[in-house]
Image (cartoon, rainbow over all chains, first blue to last red; front, side, top):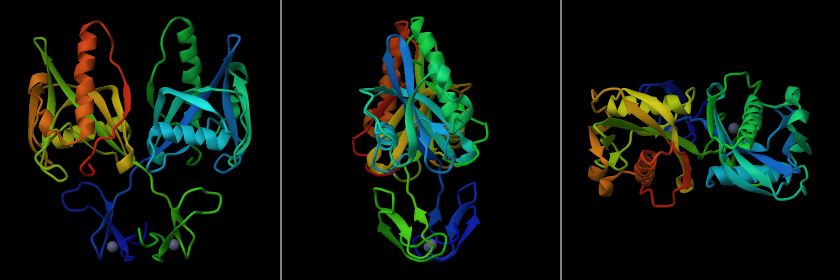
Length: 190
Length: 190
Ligand SMILES: [Zn+2]
Ligand SMILES: [Zn+2]
């Protein structure tokens, strides 16, 4: 940030009165330009038949991490809820028709100023198709997940927690909700 | 937003190529200025003695909602996690020394582009004191909560859920995690 978005004068990085950390402050109109973390919302679209659990993944058609596999996810927009954002991204990236379940993971990626959240979701059918941001969309059983070609550590963490949770559920438990800090390199922002 | 924060030229509200909603786009350097929801993080500081549960509330010394009661909470900053933000706000607003528990509520307030989250917290002692943004800090049993003088609907929702959850726990349950959309008027931003 170099200029004030309200009056176009230069901003300077200073600690405002009564504050305790540097902010971009306009030298002309005194507007304080706060910068805050962003939320990335996605889903874990699940298909269960004959005792087998499959999860939908998208292969990215955009940078960062072009060509790598991800759960459908993206930045939350103004005027929507976390659940609406997860549904929208699932529709946009995978053309998938899901029923959203409970929130499953909330993962802090403090270094890149992001919080990633994934909702459980049940696919209503297998009538999906890649959106503009995906090269392909495919179903994977646990043993087929391309662990070495996943786009982001939060996708890996969520998938690991998901399959562990499924095993726990088969033993009679109920779904968990997991918060975790993710420190592994992101390679770049979502 | 009127001017580009990168080059100081005017921005215009247009739908960028490949996008599907209006953004502030710089007419000179083509930077797209995305706007995203913000997270408000807080805690429910709990003190339990002789079978009585008390919760710490702060009376706001700042607008909006000057003079009204709130759980300690505020905007999450870059370079911190949701838990660190909740701890920081609890320390800043109430001078309270707490041990943070699990995330308890995640409340969407889509109309004002905010997501509010509250962590359960256990007070280590009663050695608290109002920070700069609080007029006073006080402990309340459920029957004493100033329900008509709470600052924000998300504080009310979180307190209602908390005391209901406590009752459920006394009956042998374990702590819940609640996500909810809050549509009641906010009167103004946090
Ligand atoms: Zn200015
Ligand atoms: Zn520009």
